[in-house]
Image 1 (cartoon, rainbow, N blue to C red):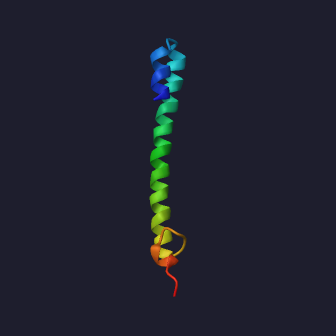
Image 2: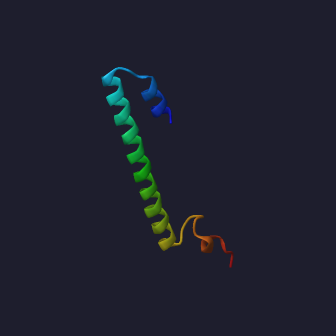
Image 3: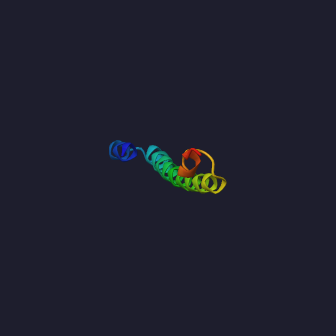
Amino acid sequence: MTYDNILRMADDPDVIDAIRFLREREVVHFQRFGEAMGIATAKMDQRNVYAVNPAFDKRK
């Protein structure tokens, strides 16, 4: 949203290009972070470690 607000106010084509690039890069980083979290969670569940696996907390 911040990038969109800056784009509405900007009139310099170089600034507009830079802000668009930063906005696109942030979206890609968000997507890749989500993918990495999914992979990490799946691997933690496979190894039965950490708190994301409910079986790990069961006391015997």
